[in-house]
Image (cartoon, rainbow, N blue to C red; front, side, top):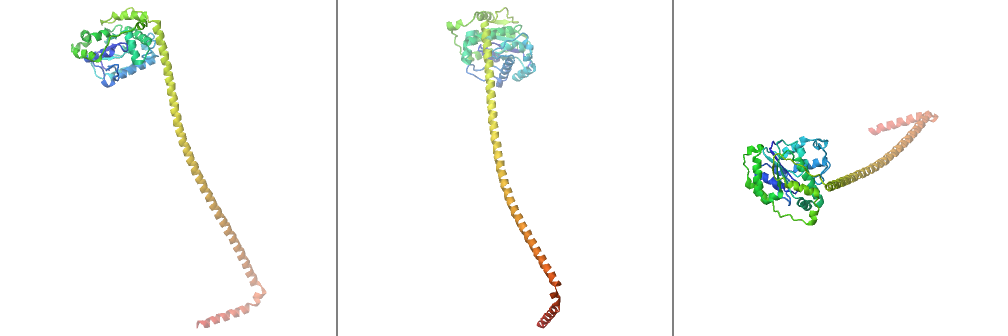
Length: 396
């Protein structure tokens, strides 16, 4: 797989990770195969996100019992559990998405949850850019894009960011508030360039970063309006989430390495919402699976009906052929019967002729043996002589 060095962009969905990844790619890092990126959507002119790696990560979340919008509860040492075994597949997917060697940037919001796993796959030293955005801005954006209720969006924001802070421990990290990126693109790009230059793994680049292009990429992608929220919106943010906001506000800048520090525990309200969302997702998946089975059975039934009709047609044709054969057999039987009658008649006539012949023969024998036949023999001889002599005279 590509040797890197690697920069991973870690941040919650709808937190500006696309803009940051695009800036790093424009700065000079490789962003993977263009034909493997997420399709364009109105929400982002360019996602800068690998489709194949995103599908791999979503599949990994499913094996762990969750999804991107219903994150699973990850137990201790989950990275080495049977559910996530298959590092070879991960390496192959990464190698396919990033065929070119050299400094590379990879962005996927699911890295907030799955970074501990990828730390066992990607060659070190690993570098990260952590970008975060206010929870209500993220929740409203998720509501517009995916139709998620605000409370679900807030719960996801808390789960993702807490997991990200834990997963970044020990990694050289540059943390940034998305609002700061929007307010000062050139300052963010300058700071990133200085930070990358300070890391040994990027010494080969020797500061050849295209800072102007990186700054322009942020300006081209963002048409940002200040976020404004109602008091009702603000009331949805829990005390635990506000504590997390305060912690994130202390992070901007370089961390070598990153230390998450003490943090508050996830609010029970967030845990309950995510558990309910995951249960609902499970029900929806079960319903989808049942629906797919229904349509599969229906398709199989339709195919079976077609096959049955074909068999019925074949049976009908065979029955028709059998009836034709039967009629032929009947006609042949009638002809045989006629021949048999003719044969019997001939035999009868022959037997009668034989009988008549035998009778005539017997009469002739009786005649030759009779007295009258013997007495008239001289007379028959004389008549025969006379007839013979008369025949000779006619010949002269």
